[in-house]
Amino acid sequence: MQDKDIVERILKGDIQAFELIINRYEMSIARFIYQMVRDRETAEDLTQEVFILAYNKLFTYKADYKFSAWLYRIARNRTIDHIRKEGKVKNVNIEDIGPVGSNEASPEEIVEFKELKESIESFITTLDEVDKQILFLRYTKHELTFNDIAVMMNMSLSSVKKRYYKIYDKFERYLSRNKLVKRGDNYELQQIR
Image (cartoon, rainbow, N blue to C red; front, side, top):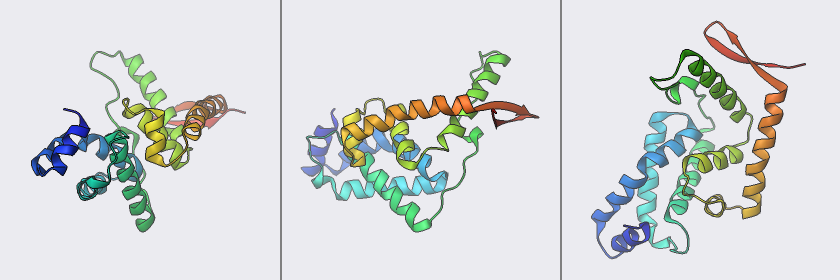
């Protein structure tokens, strides 16, 4: 069943249909919020707030746009409000992001994966919040188009595309200026002179 059909059912009084929306989007909204606040408990609380807001504002949804873009926009705005109010974002430990490799990977592949992961994570910390959000949405929500992201972020389509493609240029420059060096069990970036 399409999101638009579910929304129509909810607006016609089928309150239980909202559970379909929650089941479909809860985990991805929580990950999106976590990427911004870096705190699991806060992300869970904000996710609940987002779904309450979405339910209460469902009548404002316009079927011309993807429902997921509308929902992510609510999540983004609510999270930004929270960050402004709290005035802080927690740092994230790279090991909290996910498993280093599969059980079938060789030790060399695991080390290479970890090095690349740390390089990417370190690079991402150099980006501004808008670039981080564009990157996150593009890589974690594959069904979102650039146009969906532009609507969600209240930006022009060309601005979203320019920022997205400039991230690649920034990453290449970042890699050419830095290299990952192992220090004991950890890795750190050193500038190349």
